[in-house]
Image (cartoon, rainbow, N blue to C red; front, side, top):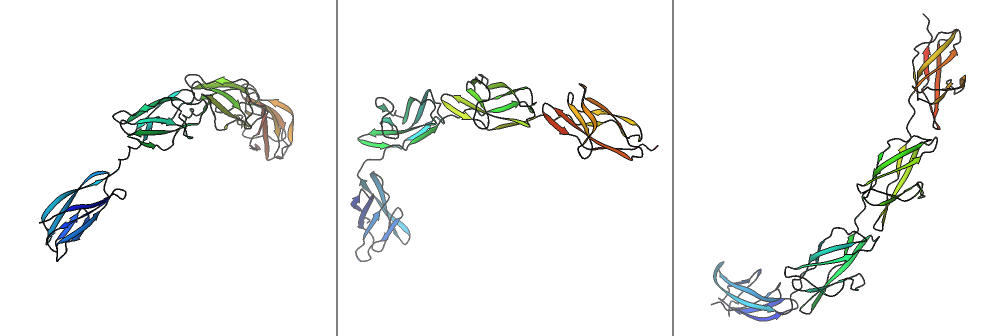
Length: 353
């Protein structure tokens, strides 16, 4: 018959020594541990590990010729307290500075707990209770302008004290700034800029160096819209700016926005040929209201004076074409709002008919 008893328990290592007698030469096993009974006396002994605090039921099995013929159960008791349940954080995913936020999580059911800062000082008044389902919760105002909120939960039960990791919850980011209009700016005059940002935030308009370029502190409305007017310098190729938003003490700068200046309307020519030896009239279209000069291939002005494209976008000039010329070549240089653009080089053949 199989016999078994617990000889000793190591509560620190959480192991137990079990011994007994069995059929001579029989295979004896407890879980994954196994041995063979002495062939002369039938005595056997095994050390079992991986025990837990409290009572551990150990099943001893005897096999002969790979067939189980007997089993008995013994109890190994490991002394010591079971560990408290781990402290976890459920929410919030982010905190809002300048107002009270609610924090929740899990811990040891029935334990008491305190909320501490990184230095170990209590930052939420009196001592609180984890409920019977293991839930804890507290409210705390997060400082205005804080980038995050950091805290530790210290729980206590049956004289056992355990601290959580340092929890860090980042502040809610402000809504990103987007520019809606204009697609292009017009140099030399006031342009209206619109976009979206953090509802209720204040904002300033800055240049690339961080200097404020639009007077006063402005407000993003409750729908998240902002707008401002700004004169774009005459001749500027673009307008560049940054929006700096502030809300609940949080300050965030946008990316650097660059809006290119609107291009002048391209120059077109109505004429298809020229008549050598006489004055020819040239017509076409360009940028309404622009001034223009007539240049040759080298950039030299070949028609005296500065002319203006009319409000309908039409231009004209007269120029004598040399007798015997096979072609006439010219370009128009348009200027408006400080912006100057040179057209392509137009080549008109001589009319030999």
